[in-house]
Length: 390
Ligand code: SAH
Ligand code: SF4
Image 1 (tube, rainbow, N blue to C red):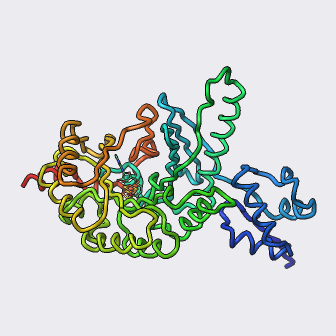
Image 2 (image 1 turned 90 degrees about the horizontal axis):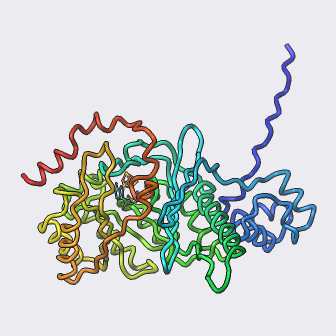
């Protein structure tokens, strides 16, 4: 029987996630010189182009070749919210009913963009709403950098329209992205290759040109990947410590069972030889009655004696399923004071964007629990508190 031949239409190549080497390679295959790749990169990332017609300094035949074979495609935006304090949150649709979030936090001296690296997360920390979703999939480097690409376009468009409306000597509001933190949804070091592709673009002078000190990867402690990051792309490192002893950290950050604190601290010390900053930031979420006593502070002081570090205390952002509570402000202050009295540099994170649920751990909070974590870990919070007291 005669069967019709099915010719598969080749998928267009998405240029958005390609780092300089990959783009130079692609352009080279079409006979183009490396500087053409750099021009293209500047159009995409610095000028936010999403089609090839506007790239007027590229030859028409090259633009046509690009248009026939390639696209510049960021994930689709489902919603955008702007908080009363200027914080913005975008929800991106990454297909198959998965969503990831991106948050922009403007401050006087900087603008920080918080990016997601995975839809869901395998680490399943009991205080994190992303952990309750289970793991859906890794984002591609195009989806990671696409969050930055989109946010930059929106903020710049906003800035130029604000300038038009400015009267007298009132300055236009400055909404530049000066810092990027990988602190949204997912564990970035468990999506290593795609993460590094996106980081390279953030640092590339022909793309976003951010300094290594202003790009931070936050990790729950994937030790082997901390070592790889040191060699491949050393940026600022934040480590989610949350507990100063293994018994408690095993429960709060389940990955600790695989890479306990001593191993993690050794990896941090090795990282410091390559890091752009001369300290590691330890994030420490403040959970009422769980990790906020004087004894816990003492454990952190001992850790600070073994590594150059700074502590960032994060008031827990509660969400219903967690069954956990935020430490009262007075306890957070005393805890911080205790560390500072021992000479440990300590800051307390301000909560921003509360009215649009844009704070850490609240991201994509509306997405339902697909893990049945509640069934696996009944009364987790109660267990944590009781073991802590017992
Ligand atoms: N997976 C990485 C990065 C994403 S989480 C990590 O764990 O470091 C980014 C930060 O948000 C981490 O320090 C995490 O502990 C914190 N976080 C998660 N849930 C939170 C919550 N409910 N309240 C406050 N901070 C939270
Ligand atoms: Fe994953 Fe980080 Fe949330 Fe833990 S805190 S579940 S590692 S995203």
